[in-house]
Amino acid sequence: MIEISHVNKWYSPTFQVLTDCTTNVTKGEVVVVCGPSGSGKSTLIKCVNALEPFQSGDILVDGTKVNDPKTDLPKLRSRVGMVFQHFELFPHLKIIDNLCLAQEKVLGRGHDKAQAKGMQLLERVGLKEQAQKFPAQLSGGQQQRVAIARALAMDPIVMLFDEPTSALDPEMVSEVLDVMVDLAREGMTMMVVTHEMGFARKVANRVIFMDRGEIVEDAAKDDFFGKPRSDRAQKFLSKILSH
Amino acid sequence: MFGNLDFDVIRRALPYLFYEGMTFTLTLTALAALGGLIFGTALALMRLSGFKILGRIAGVYVDFMRSLPLVLVIFWFYFLVPYIGQWVTGASRPISVGAFASSLITFIMFEAAYFSEIMRAGIQSISRGQPAAASALGLTYAQTMRYVVLPQAFRNMLPVLITQTIVLFQDTSLVYVLSITDFLGAASKVAQRDGRLVEMYLFAAIVYFTISCIASYGVRRLQARIAIIR
Image 1 (cartoon, each protein chain N blue to C red):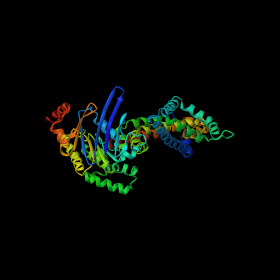
Image 2: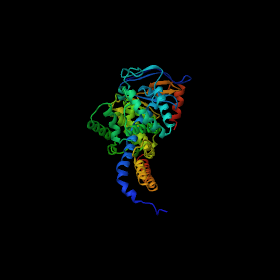
Image 3: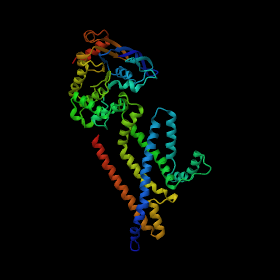
Image 4: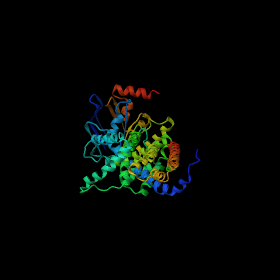
């Protein structure tokens, strides 16, 4: 589904953020990307739907080359759902209109059909009653659930999560993770940048560990948590899991 | 002090002052504000676009307009527009442009320079995550601007835009240099005709003051309301 091969990215000639990153996500797989801050994991996931450009290497999504200038990026992105750290709901639109905008303008769905789809997804994330409110009237956890519903409204073939719970108050983390766990169990292909190791243990198929722009470890979940091969991953895990 | 002043002259001139004068002033203000906002938003988008040349053109235009006195621009335009029209259409003689059309074009072009700076600030006030989220959903650049960025920028800047329009409302009185009958022009004509300068100019001042004050009060109310919605 996602094939990342030998991706390099520089912010300036002397500052390389991604170094020779190669990995892939197959259909139905849940891959968690973790690593210390500044390790390039968010940058890597943003390269997948070309929100960030990169200088060399290739990324293919469902067989389409992301870094080909001839690729119809809006069309590609409409099939790749993305959830951001800071939700990024559109504050001037009601919740239901947040879910309908791209359905109508990008997919060309009729208003009624888009509304019905939107309401169905809001019900699924438990926020049907909030449909007529504005984003600022919702809590962080509710906003992030709306953001997930907004991405799902496009019927994506894969979902990207960029630290979806890092900006949330602790008591709201679980309501968002529950939605993500359900999604994973339904067989959605997911690439998730997160520090939530509990989530990784529960639903991940593979864990990728990044440090200083490199993919240091790319292993099946049990191998990763059981006996990480690299020192850096071991140190990271011991810090993160020690309390 | 007011013993030898005749305030009845105002009452008699009221229909003329408002039906002709104020109608013209308000029409010019509204159309110039609308045109200036559209043209100004286009200039702002040019400046913020990735294309350096477009940005430079818009930047030079804005700086140029902002460094000229408005009266001078009104004057120049009135005399130049017929010749520009001739040059564009290839006509054999300078085309005739009415005083209204000429002043409207002038105000749109002049105000666009100011509105563009306001809209530019408004667009820059939107966090970069917003256009990123819009693109991630598959919206094109134009759609992102149209449905996500500009509505928010406009809303954030609405109080400033209205304040600028109040300034524009006062500035429209400068069309007197083209002998146009706007509100002040109408008051001035009555004043000259009846020899009642003090009364008429006093009244004109009160009317401008009252309308501007009410509008400013409206802006403050609006600001408070917008602050709640966020």
